[in-house]
Image (cartoon, rainbow, N blue to C red; front, top):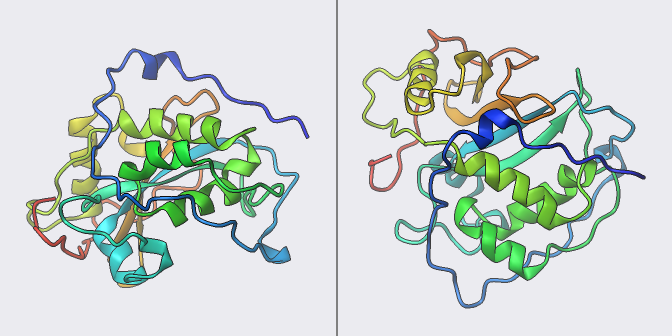
Length: 235
């Protein structure tokens, strides 16, 4: 299977990257084990039409996952992301089903886990993203997470907990105000059925230039959002 790696768009290269997030690495940090993949979770043979950079709202991630293997080591206010954090970089087709678990892959190397740990909720999520999405377009974990980190580190994350009467439109405006290169129609706002914010997904074309999301924008601008609060309520 020959995997084609996309080039970083000139538009992104011209935009100064912000500093990568920093945190304390636990002394026992190590790669998570390979996940078992059920046959119905394998989708191959789909041509990638665009990319999604999924940025999760960490307080809701914690609410759903609790202190399980998905948040090991546990999230804490001083050493782990507490507001927005990287979920993953997803290659998508024109329509569902999207490519997923395209080939068997192994455990992420320890160096890549250390490099990515401060951006994401857990080492277990890194392993999941490599298997589910990285396997569908990248030769190695290092190559996959290098692209994910380049995109994520260029996004200036807004603080949204102080926005009164938060709506999906105000959330999009907060992102575009911080990132002038990002158009509002490239921002998909994901919520659960109750209207609780789960994550923001940024759409890119095959050259990693921001692009209108082919599948729509998720929550419409006038949709009121419920926020699971962070522990400090400063995000």
